[in-house]
Length: 165
Image 1 (cartoon, helix red, strand yellow):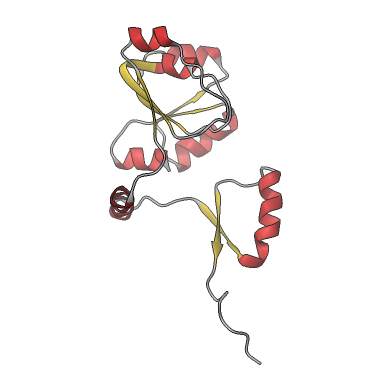
Image 2 (cartoon, rainbow, N blue to C red):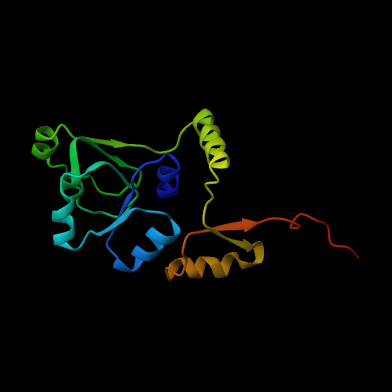
């Protein structure tokens, strides 16, 4: 969703991923302008100091120094994922580049409504798989196997109707 919202705001978007297999989806479906495989040192090196901001959605433990190196001076890294362990921050690269690391969870009612209104106005839609209630156990198994492309949404239409005799 971050890519779709950023594009709707008119921002040039670069997607970073450890998987090169996500490039086509990021560019053709989500609308990213460019793609960097973060495990490819030559790609990371070429992008050093070129990004104004990064929204980091990763909840697993991962090094922040490579991301911080991609930021321009006065750039901002915003963490929305929540790794279990404390983060290691390279103080010198933050100080020398006047870079900022911040965190964000979810906005309040006002911000959420503004986001929904913006999404409606700019046709920003989530990529979801709607499943019936009786598919939930299968969906959980798929989650454990990482067999889910985006998010499941449980459709509740007709689930609260009384059975007819």
